Amino acid sequence: MTVTSTARRSAALLLALGSMANAQSVFKLDTDDEIRASARTLAYDTMLYYHGNETGQTPGILPGPPPGGDYYWWEGGALWGTMLDYWHYTGDSSYNSVISQALLFQVGEGVDYQPRNHTASLGNDDQGFWGMSAMLAAELNFPNPPSDQPQWLALAQAVWNTQAAPDRHDETCGGGMRWQIPLSNNGYNYKNTIANGCFFNLGARLARYTGNSTYMKYAEETWDWLVNIGYIADNWDIYDGAHVESNCTDINKAQFSYNAAVLLQGMAYLYDFTDGSQRAMWKTRIDGLLARTLEVFFPDNIAYEVSCEPGLTCTTDMYSFKGYVHRWLTNLVQLVPDTADKIKPVLKTSAQAAVNQCVGGDSQRACGFSWKSGKFDGKMGAGQQMNVLAAVSTLLVDSAKGPLTASSGGTSKGDVNAGSNSPYQREHAPITTGDRAGAGILTVIVLAAATGTFGWMSWER
Image (cartoon, rainbow, N blue to C red; front, side, top):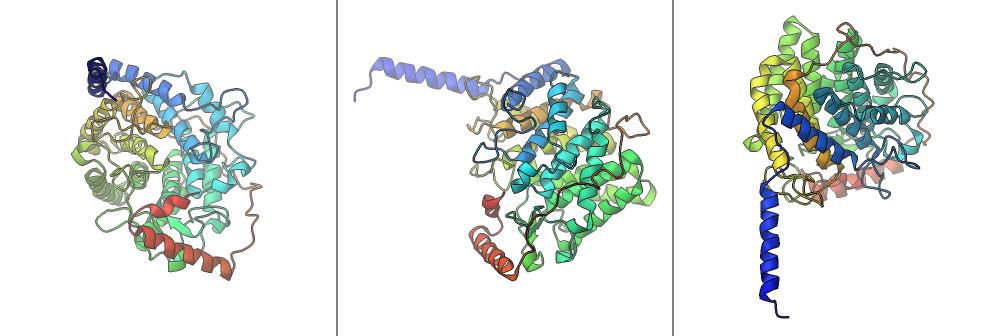
């Protein structure tokens, strides 16, 4: 077929326009007002992925889980944490009623973020993300629910109480929580950093908020387990996890940014809560892990998901990790002030790179995932939008208050016994020898296919 000169000119024009779009982001970050305006647009675009407040839809969750949509239950909880921080840093309360509805609708029958209709994808990390968002609501003095509804602090305590229960910490691998909660779920035979990291994080924050050192004791024990099992390496690499069949010796050394960040945020709370030699100990650990985190996950000072970004082989879950890292490192700036000079310039550069590639979609402002490339990669989604929203809104940290405690203005009501009467039970038969053998075969197949990578996560839920 002959291509006419008119067609060639049209194609050239479209190419030129596309190049211009790739070079001209609509988002500006030079002043606080520009940051707020950019964050407002990013929040709007992020919430376009949420339909839970529409007639006939389920409040609290993003479309899913697969095959009904791309997103597992946990990412809804992560979304509300992102939106809580957006409200806190920008002062925009436009979405507050939606946030509150979502956090309350998903509490489940035991009011502990274990809804039965999401049992098939219920991991300790999934429950932990919802608990951390409830904890954030308490720390930010997000408007409290009516007195006849669950309260933010009590919800965080309910999650912690159910995870501190002895049945979550068996003797395999010398302790630690498993990835999944129900015995029948794929991944129940895997003990990973993120599940235990969320428990560590939540315990650290509850200790600081309530002043109850029992929470800190459990956090310290979890930290020690992560070190002793080898998930926290001597050089501060943070590995993903291992299988109980090997007594957790077949460590998957894939590194994901949110594993390092969830530990850093928890350590920042413990640093602020303690004094003397304990504070010095946590500061030494913070300095070590922070330096390694910036080195591994911020090449050229731009967020980069090292285990999956090359080749864009990330799962939907992984496409949301960068935003958590920006949010949680910002807490270090607030709670460990002498880290600010190391962290803030990096997050500023990273946020600018993030918005530079938000030139996609019909709106020509949709965000992709590959910030370091400087180009829109076409990988649009809720996680990708959440990432950039978090990176931009947290730039306003200097004008925002740090997380509160019960003694410094926090008003959320707690319940030390929350979750103790949960009706949730593992309604599954005990694992048999045959089950263990089958799981072992799966482990061999998976590790052979993806040694040292994240390929095993193809059966992630």
